[in-house]
Length: 97
Image 1 (tube, rainbow, N blue to C red):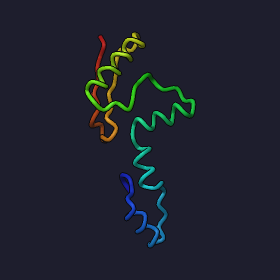
Image 2 (image 1 turned 60 degrees about the horizontal axis):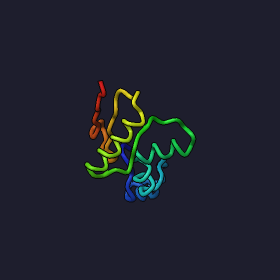
Image 3 (image 1 turned 90 degrees about the vertical axis):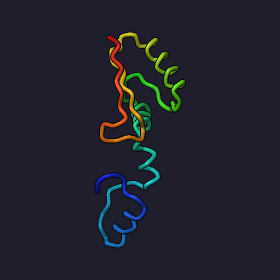
Image 4 (image 1 turned 180 degrees about the vertical axis):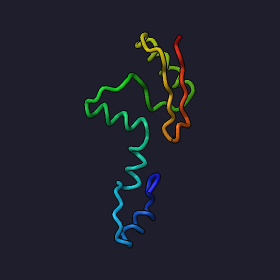
C-alpha cells in the first residue's frame, strides 16, 4: 500500500484479515517528517551532517543558515528540505563556490 495508511485502511485490513505492516497514522505522520528522522538518527548516535530544524519563517531560516555557515566553513553545499513534501519536491540547494 503506497503512502501512509489511514485509520480507514487499518480498519479495512482488520476486517478482511489482511496483514498491514504499519504504525498508527499519528505515529506515521510524526516520524515520516525529514526533521524527525534526523532527530531519531541523532538520538541513536548515528552521525548526521550539520543542519537545523524546527524553523518556519524566512527570518528563522536566514538566522539558522548564517549560524550554520559560520560554524561550518568547509561545507561547500547546503541542502534545504521542507518536511511535508515528497517526491523530491521541496528541496533547495545553495552552493558556496
